Structures are given as structure tokens and as C-alpha cells.
Amino acid sequence: MRKKPFIAAVMTLVLATVVGCAQYDNRRGVEVVWKPDAIDGLKVGSSTRNDVLQLLGPPSQVIALADETVLYYLFEYSSGQGLILVFYNQVEIDTRYDRAIFFFDENDLLTDFATKIHSTDVE
Amino acid sequence: MVLAELGPPLRVSALPNGLVLAWEHWEVRETRVGISLGFAGANAMSLDWGTTATEGEYLLLAFDEKRRVIDGAFTRWKNDAGGGQAIQPFGGFLSVADVDDLLQGMSQHRWGASSLKRLPAALNGHSDPDVGANGLEQRGTPRGIGQRVLEMD
Image 1 (cartoon, each protein chain N blue to C red):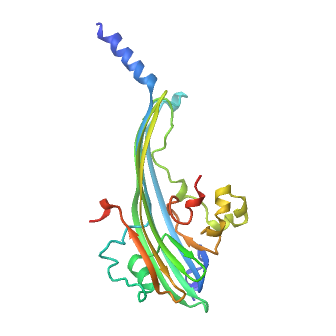
Image 2: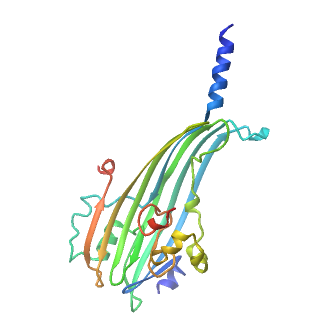
Image 3: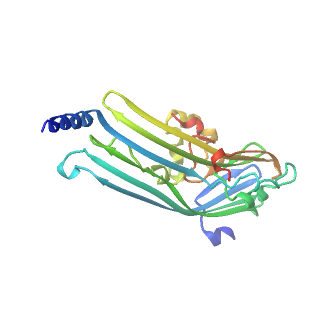
């Protein structure tokens, strides 16, 4: 019999202080196909823009520079959770970017490139 | 020949040695399930679950200064774009599924207003992939990295 007021008090306290909680994840960008094995055959000075496009597909961004073009492949993964209280909020978001960038000269020959894949994405 | 076959491209940009055209097709699926006291006139006690999925095709073709195709690529995808769940007893503060960035109109509709963007975006105009002179980007490209990183608040 005495438990009912106690439970009601606890429930009231929880409802009064916990305004909300949430969890989500989000994915944007192109498929991460620039794994080490896939790009092993690319060589600076001899590979062409077409080689990269055939290997990796369309990039997230094509960037036009003065005499160069850049293919930029991007993938974003973010996950987060939030706790919203009356006097204190906590939202934690973890975002990572897998990316690959390829530079080409005026003859569409590869001049430089770099890639990065989050460790959990490498099979 | 390409234009006759595929029709007008959805994205276009100049390149140092020609131009690049792109065609895209997107399907965005957003599913949300929620329980709330909205029917009783109260924005409270909401339980939300949501998920988003995308499906589409993208064709990119580059042309030289004589308008001949020099390279290109095509992709077709079907992806999970995210989702989440939430319990929000006193109102909807967080959205568990958000696809607003995937539903924006084509950049051509905003060409005339490129100087009226928010200041960080206007100042990044020389790198803006929407103006047709600096390159182009696919829909759904992350904004936290790449040519748009300076546009963030």
C-alpha cells in the first residue's frame, strides 16, 4: 500500500526531469570502393582520369582548378545519441569521413592522390 | 549525339579542358512510426522510430574542348541512409530521420541568388560546385568536408 505513493513520486520525478532521449545514425556520400586492393594499380604519371572513373565510378565532387581537375570521393557516417533533461542536455555525435582525392593535369594524367578509410570499414 | 540520346543534363560545369555533364535519378524513402498525444492536442509523450533509404542512378560524362566524350562513369545504388529512435515525453526536440538535404531543388534554380546566400556560403562562391564554373557534385554529398566545408556555420 505504501509503495504506490513512492512509485508515483518516482514516475513524476522521471517525467519532470527526462525531457527526451534519442539515438540515430546517418549516412551520406558515395560507396567506399577506394579500398587499398582496388586502387593498387593506379600509378602517378601514367593512370588517367578515365582509369579512375572506371575503377571507382562517379565521384562526389568534380573540381575544376586552373589547369587541373580533381575527383573527390566522400562518404560520411555519423551516429549520435542525446539525453535532454530540464537543466542538463547531453548530445554525443560521432562523425567520420572516408575520402579519396585524385588530381589530374591538363592531359588528364594522374598527378597525385590520397585516400583514407576509417579502420572499421576496411575488410 | 549525347544530348539527343539523353536529353538535357541535370548538372553541368566547365573544366580546364572542356566540360562535364551529369544526369541523375533519385528515389528517397522515409519511413516514420510514432505514437504521441497529438490527437489529444498535446505535443507530448512521443515515441518515434524512423528509417531512410535511397536508390538511384548517376551518369557523369566529360567532354573535351571539341565536345567529344573523353571519359565518364555510371553508378546505380540502393543504400540505407540512416535512421533512429527516440522517446520524448514533453515534445519533439530531435528528429530521428532527416532527408531535407536530399530533397533540395536543382542548383540551376538558385543561380540568380548565389550572391544572396548566407555570408559563409557567398564568400565560398569561387569554390561553389553549384555555379557551373568550378565543377559539380552529386546530391547527398556530405557538407562537412570537400568544397563546401567553408560554408558551414
